[in-house]
Amino acid sequence: MDNNQTLMKKSFLTIFALFSTIWIYANNVQITNVSFKPNTNTIKFDISWENSWRSSVLNNWDAAYVFIKYFDPGTGTWLHVPFTNTNNVIPNGFSVSEVPGVGRYLYRSVVEVNSTIDKCRTGD
Image (tube, rainbow, N blue to C red; front, side, top):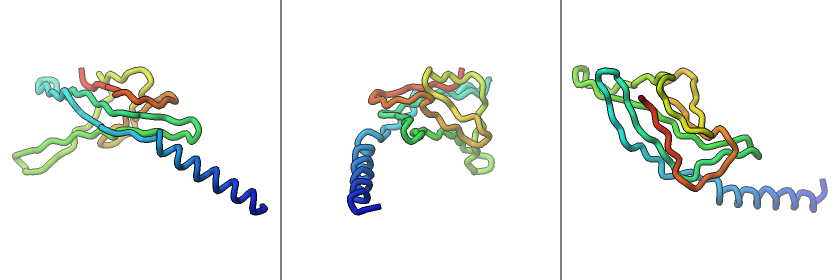
């Protein structure tokens, strides 16, 4: 590879890196409207964030990792709440990971960059 090709490749990668950082950012993650129904052990909340994105170029996306903990005063420890895959309301264009574990990843399932706040609700 000659010097011109190397220079062009480095220039392209630098320009790509600069432009991708301009539009690929997500921020302002918020969890609101939290409620708990003791008779059904249901936790309901809205999660939102600005500038969520999914790219087809790099097959990459942002996600919010959601987990819930509670304090057990009897033992003095914090414990994790397991998620179920029932009664979750996920809007079109979003998906939730269903892999076993403590939390769930919430992410865009379609290629898009959005500058508005996206809301998802879990619970009944």
